[in-house]
Each structure stands twice: as C-alpha cells, then as structure tokens.
Length: 69
Image 1: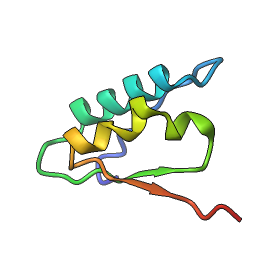
Image 2: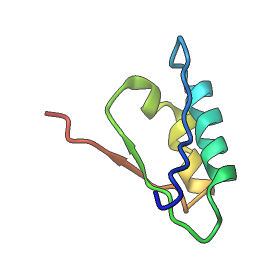
Image 3: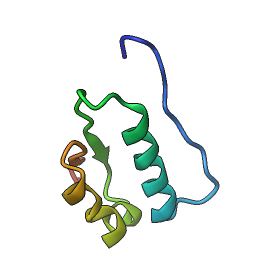
C-alpha cells in the first residue's frame, strides 16, 4: 500500500485456473519478506483442489474466508 502499486486482473470467466494464475502473479510480484493473506468468499472456484492445495506448498499465502452469512 505504501507504493500505491495495484496488482489486478479482469477475466470474463472465473475458473480455478485463472485464480491460480492470479495468485502466482501476486506471489511473484510481492517481495518475499512480506506476508500475503488471501481473503476469499465462498465462491466454488475458491474451494477447488487446485486452489486448496496451493497454500500447502506456499505457506506465505494463507487463505482466509469471509463469513458465510
């Protein structure tokens, strides 16, 4: 936030592969000494095996889900 740099992406569809690509981009762009917390809603794409396994290999990117109700 201090630099004002925004990492963003717009897609017409929201498959897990696009989300994973975006998370990889964030991981590549953010300096290694900074923590990154992914705040996600309960959209089905956010709970696919492709996405749920990602933080296991990348502990710097823990997932946090918004309340369901």
